[in-house]
Length: 141
Ligand SMILES: [Zn+2]
Figure (cartoon, rainbow, N blue to C red):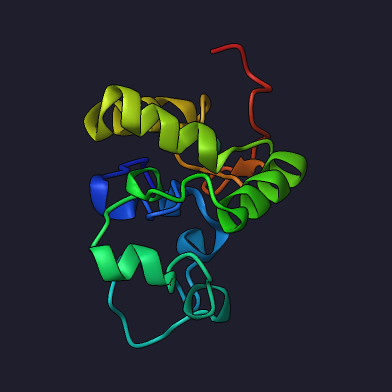
């Protein structure tokens, strides 16, 4: 059981909510999120161009929107892919954090990705609840 409990440590520099990622939600070879330091590193995380971005790291930026190159080609590329495949937008997330602050964003994310049936977490990559397997937005509440 994964009752939804997104916190600040799960929001990646690119605006991705690691708490709803399939790599975070699985039990085997679980990823602890882009900001976590752990011994087992999923390839996607280690090779992530945003996580390894020179500008982010050189300036010690917390989120991409703080960068003077924002929105750069990298973030636009990943944003486009996620909008098309998973109906989610990093740029929209980053702008929400920029405009309303991280606390408000986290509050909204915990509502947005909470399974209406069991209170578990919706897996953004599979579009189903990671606990009960129900599809997202199929219940009116
Ligand atoms: Zn559920």
